[in-house]
Image (tube, rainbow, N blue to C red; front, top):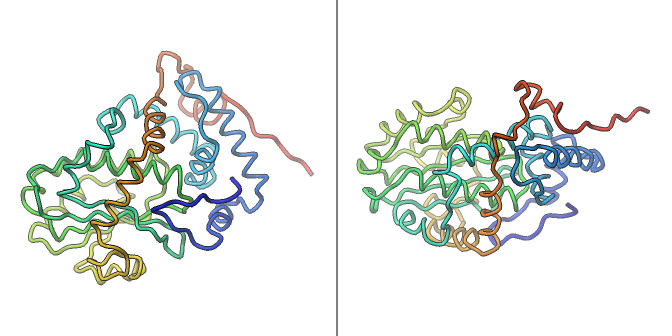
Length: 312
């Protein structure tokens, strides 16, 4: 891509495209194009993929979010298509315009417009304390996945941070927390959608917060557990995320959580993004067609294409 396209809900730092590329060794755009050609060619040659053609800008972002590693991009892209079959409760049967409306009474979830100075993006979820008995954890993760897919097609960042404002957590909501679902959802987001999760921030303030932390720690992998940051109040969040980037409720200068939630939903429920989600839903695997090769051979690129070797 030549430049980042404007988005109604995303702002970009100056030279963000070039700076993110450079951090992953792509200050030479010709190298990026070569790696992208190889990645695109590999996808087209996989007999078990039901969809073999994807938007090239999307594939570039996928490669970038895998830190410029073609092999990692192959592995994660294969997982994404495979998980769409294996975990349909997370990745299929979207009704974006309607299915999330009950969730918005319980939790406001949105992407902060401004990226950090390090080009990381923040996704924030604020529990309202309302209708907690109607909370469905899988619906929450489905919404995170829809937001993540929007970022995969429109953003260009180093990765993201998750912020959970737990001050409105009630016992009714705590009862709905399932460590197995939390683990599956976070694994899918980090291992299949590709973006690097820099930190997970949880803001305390509820008398049930300790229980939330116990459940989360049971669900997190060892790597993600090291990235969990607990805040006794929202003021300590300023050490990690610029205050002015946060919503009014957290002492920042941005719009309220309700306004940001509504703006995000308007964008991800657009006909354009719904079409994107339908295409991703169709991008599954036919396991009967998967080549019978050893795991490391399958992911090292042996079945597929090879990178051009340049010798000075």
